[in-house]
Image 1 (cartoon, helix red, strand yellow):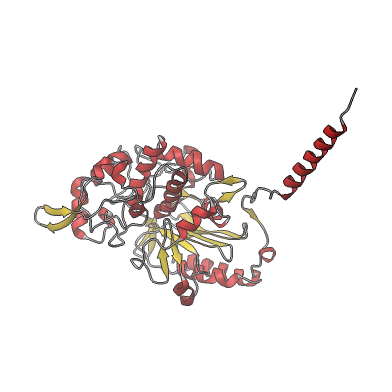
Image 2 (spheres, rainbow, N blue to C red; image 1 turned 120 degrees about the vertical axis):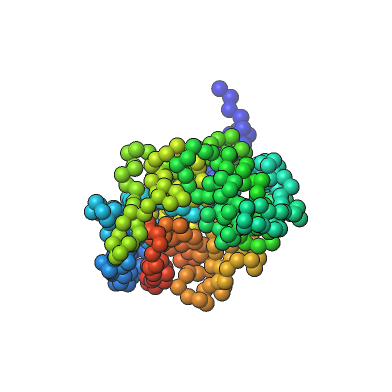
Length: 432
């Protein structure tokens, strides 16, 4: 056999160059799923953590709350996870760490994330008019005059179309019906049969959104911040653009990849018993909240067809911490990339100018602490992002300190102070 020395040299040269390039290629980042660790191992003071725990314990002992689940994560490690009090006072059912809570408006950040996942695929631009996908929104009108006697009204043409960005930032001019701050909008939405938050009725988000599109706006799009059903509209947009039911999109594209097995619009039968009762206090005693404009059992009963992008999900403390950790990791968790870190940078920017907040600005999914917020104290570093839910749930995540705090409760019509106390005390735990 004749071997060409030149061929051998070329082969060896190619091999060496390839090996050198491989050695220079950075390894793909793969952060681990959440796991438990000692507070000291991630720079958290155990002594101060005991004080925080005592504060929460006292809130339940003094019957400020019937029960709660709290979680603190630093550097991807769970350093505190506690369940206190009762999941249901009447039956004496103790709260468990894996209890499932109605997270209401904490759904919004998840819906916004799904929107941005499709945006990354080039499905639309943020300043596209929503009427491009939902024609019923063409030629929006702004409320002008209203008659309380018969709920009739007049409206004038809006000066611009509603865009996807307007919907993400609550600047579309849409209202929120039964929880709206404008009595006129409450009546208009009620008369039109709009579903505002959750329902056991046999209706889809598409049906609801198409009715909503025909109603007048509070103001011209982009002029003001008005908390709204915009995220419900975007849930329907996700169905249109993805070709999938909204619940299935979240399950297949977000929840299953991240391991969020306890986050659902409607709980599977095997998980239903873990749903915490909504409590209120009457004559000094805790009782289950009655049916009002919604059935409190909506996550486990009824038609189970209404996938509210603004308020419909239920979840656990650990599942929601997992979602937030993905953000702190720059859009990745356990080797699964949900968003690019460049997209997250856009999400966290001030998207509403001076229309919202003092000490915070509003991005595309969260309230975000700004320089003024740092000076106020107790709410985190600049860039800390947060929100809460209608049934008294709160969360925050600090990208600088790599801290997540989650406090899950289920109450209505009570005043209590664990929310601000918990957040303020979490940031005093840092001991590095």
